[in-house]
Every structure is written in structure tokens, then in C-alpha cells.
Image 1 (cartoon, rainbow, N blue to C red):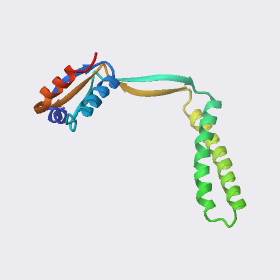
Image 2: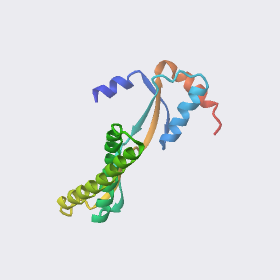
Image 3: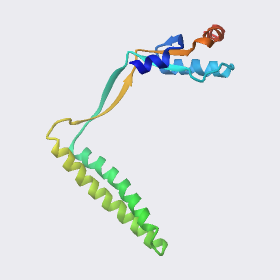
Image 4: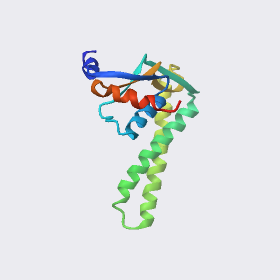
Amino acid sequence: MASSNLITTNKEPIATYRSYQEAQKTVDYLSDHGFPVKGTLIVGVGLRSVEQVVARMTYLRAAGWGALSGAWFGLLVGLFLGIFTATAMSLIAVVLWGLLWGAVAGAIFGLIAHAVQGGHRDFVSEAGLVADKYEVLVDSDHAARAHELLGRTPH
């Protein structure tokens, strides 16, 4: 916590919002009106980790995701090896073989990885941080000017 206190020691909160977009809009407004925004902070207060489950992980889905990531890797390997081919047709053949074998290997790996989990974590999710509120902090030397500018914003 000592490092965050060093960052905010000479800062003063000028506004608090429920969303990051509102806080960002305030900093944009200040910037557009010539305010020295360098060093301005948008601080998320009351952070929580939120994980939203988006789907059930099945063997078919594990194989599909594995095939997709393997195909990307195979494509990159195929393109790299294709640099050393003599003709356009051999380049296309190497790239397609890389794509195919990457997808097959990825699908097999995805199936094995899912099976090894043994029924734990049988879902796909997206995780992120969410704040209860967002504070805009500016250098204490410029806080009066920021309050003046924000007093002129249309509500």
C-alpha cells in the first residue's frame, strides 16, 4: 500500500463516477479544454473479481478449441516453412498441411487436456475486475482549475 500512497500523495479527487466510461469522459473533457491531464488518475475503488460462466466445457468443445488453436500454430509453421519452397503451389501445399496437422494435433491435445481435468472446471468463463466506483484524481496544484472546468459541463 505504500506505493499507492506515494502515487496519490499530491493528488486530489475531483469527481466520482459509477462507471469507468464516465470517468474517462471527464478526463477527455478536461483535456479538450486545455487542462494539464498528465499525471491524472482514474482509480477503481472497491475492486471485485468477477467471473462470468459463458458455456459448459464438453469433449466436443475442448476438441474444437484445441483444433482452432492448433490450426493457428500449424498455419504459422506452414508459412515459415513455406518461405523455403520453390513454387507457389508447394507454398500452398506446405501451408495447408501445416494447417491440417496443427488442427489435428490441437484437437487431440484439447481432448487429452480436458480428460486429465477429471470433471473439474467443466465450464468456459471470462474473468475481469469490476469497481464499485471510479475516482478522478488530479495534481493538487491544478484541482481548483479542474473544479472550475467541471462546473461548466452541461449536465
